Image (tube, rainbow, N blue to C red; front, top):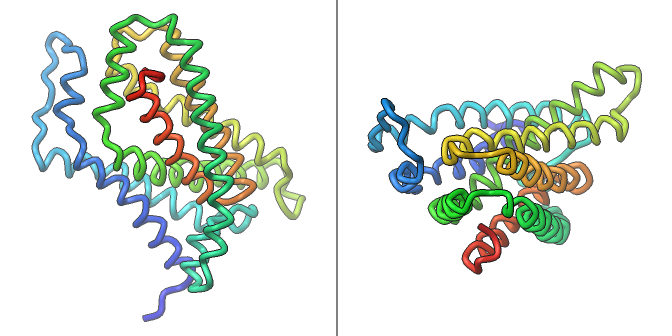
Amino acid sequence: MTLSIKTRLFLILFTAGFVGIVSFLFVDLSAIIELIPPTPGTEMPAITPIFKVLSLIQPTVLLALAVFTGVSLAPKVGLSAPFAEALAAKTEWGHALKRQVAPGLLGGFIGATAILLISAVFRSFMLPETIERIGRFGKVVGIPTRLFYGGITEELLLRWGFMTLLVWLAWRVFQKRRPAPTNGCFIAAILFSAIIFGIGHLPIAFMLLPEANIAVVLFVITANSAFGLVAGYLYWKKGLESAIIAHMIGHVVLLTATYAGAYF
């Protein structure tokens, strides 16, 4: 049986994102739990192999929905994943990938620099124990998870799935008489998806930092939203893979800064 190009594209992107999800199996969850201050009357779950495997179910379902959404709607609004699409169509993919690298590298450094500058502003308003725990958490989450989940899976969820859906909805609800969405649809989708990306990091921040103050909240939202703006712009103007490369490079720069003592 010959698979359609859309089916192959779904499988390529889903497989790439699933690698990021599976990378969580290699994260030392016990070390992360040790960073969480104990709450009276609350017992932490035992970290068993079954627990770790079951914890992958929800993100896998969300990934499948996001990839399906992007595959279905991205072509309709002019968004793309050039490298993955070339692989799916079995056409020459080298040029498609090459065009993603330079903007991705530049975007990664710009996004990481923005986060470093934002952290320099907010860390003076944070408690010393908060700064210390953030730094320890950053080192516990391994490089594979940062690169594959942060770089690939999060971009598939937030850009390929969510941002694409926002552009399509804005177009069909507010500009349905136009043959294609205008720049306003893309800008609004980039802004909203970036803010959601920032807010989406708050649950782990509150779990890790019950003493979190307004500075922590603003830092988490502002820093992640700033990077979300960079990734969203790259996805719009260059392609999904440029946003993925930027996200990966951003994690490398921030982790390097962490070990150098320049970032948490």
